[in-house]
Length: 219
Image (cartoon, rainbow, N blue to C red; front, side):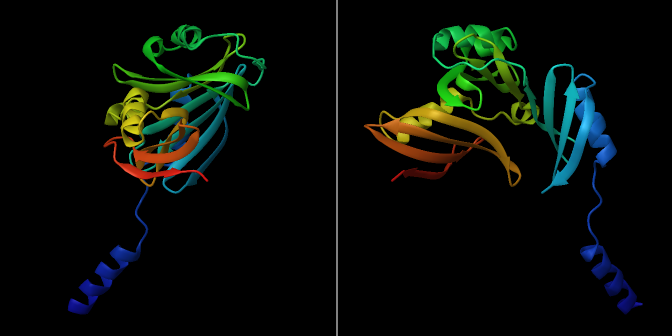
């Protein structure tokens, strides 16, 4: 009997844990998060379901935690949106444009940059239980991408303004020029770059605690 109990215990340890959320349930959650868009692809990687969907002129990517069904990120992109080649709008203009999609963005943290969408402002917002990022065409004010982080809001992650303060305290006078909120190894991280005195710095910090994981000068 003792040997049988030990054998059963060993099997319990070795057997893979049952997923709390099935692929079908993840697809249903993604459809609900995007207002009923059609699922194109769904796969599971490192504890997260990644579901791609299409609806109208929009393309969506939804990330769902397989253990709980929590929605980590909803990214909405608009492939038909025109690109901008110049910066004709100010950061305040970008916030006004972003606020039409998410009112909380009116007081958001705007970063100017150039990327796949041409000349853009990335407006981060965190207020009243909502966390997200809106990419605004810096020439026309058109919205090219919207990213929402429901689980980050539930966890109370730091705002981009708070991250900027921490970075400036870590390196006096540093200003953030790139910033991303990512889910990695069971937690949200802020990753980005900042400049100060002509030098460029890379950083990574815990989005909930503000603890720096990496901070260094780029050579």
